[in-house]
Image 1 (spheres, rainbow, N blue to C red):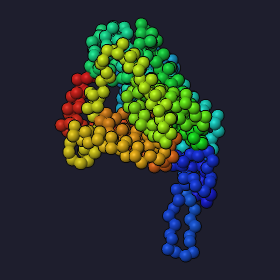
Image 2 (image 1 turned 45 degrees about the horizontal axis):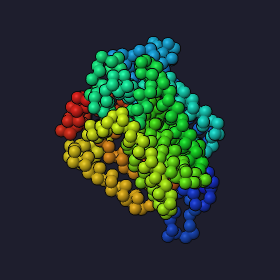
Image 3 (image 1 turned 180 degrees about the vertical axis):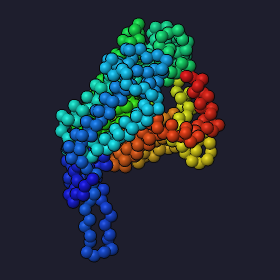
Length: 503
């Protein structure tokens, strides 16, 4: 913390992240209120959250060391860090660091608290890096982000095993000739991936483009498929971050700040990259659409491509469709461009629909089951508990969906910065979900980093803190010790029963 009478260019997390900061109109520092009734006026200094390159560099080193410690303990042997590893933990899943770190302590309670401390430490380091981002060189920031990805690539899947569900659905379709939208992984329970997957009785909720792409994996070997999918996921994350950098530069923002805001978030690192989730395959075309529309050299081809590539994102995960009305809002004053974006979306949808029908018939991803499942600290469940109506009841979930639609319509009618509008709509989507996972914040982070709203960035940081504190194992252990179960309601018990049935 420091007091700075100037305009505080170094403000990062709460600033408008303009490259040309320092002007009279910047949103940089948080000014203390000045009384207007007194004469003469008291010119109080502005207080800014800032840090220098040394603090920023140490924070980046801390992130790297925390990631390395997490990978070391998760690779060492079966532990609570890697779900289902107590049942099966082949050396190819443990990774190349297994031989180096095997023998490290594996006490469940110790590792649970250790993971909690590490994630909180990374959250603190993230705040310091944000405060120092403008003082760090491009080389330091980029090398640190790439190093974090390289370290996490060596890790087994952290906290969740969705990567094996992806392979399980792929083997179900391409290896056993069963439609993953009408059959479940338990239908081939003698397949070796069965012991590694978790959603044994859930029809695939993943988009047809992603599912079809996984059919191309070398499915004869689970180990090769696993490492290939992990590697492509990490590369997709880096490609996504490169697009965030490019968009920031095109919009006149400081790319270092945008990159740090997204990539150094501990949820991004531990849960998204460390969990090897397929959200990156949605985020790459989504950010490509944003990059095409924010390019200074706009052209009909770029507008048409923007609509088309967004449909690729939708074909991976349907939630990406939320960006479409805001893409249209971006070009709304120019009816020619509006027509081109719509034309691109339609032209891309036709072959994607044909691919889906050819491979899967008229069956669609199973979004219904997960939309009715509750997590302990999803916003509807927390609100329902606070209101004393029994947590995330079906009625409250319906209200949340209506509120989401109303929010999107309000944002579209209000106009303004379309990227900021898309960010608020994404935040509303996350808040409406009954099944809330921590890495969903990465849907929001790039829009908050690129938008003009300081409030949206603050809300994103607040959501990050909330998700970190509610998902670390120490919170669950504390609640269990005190006999507190947020799902101990009729709605929660019904959700737990359904989740047990599906898994």
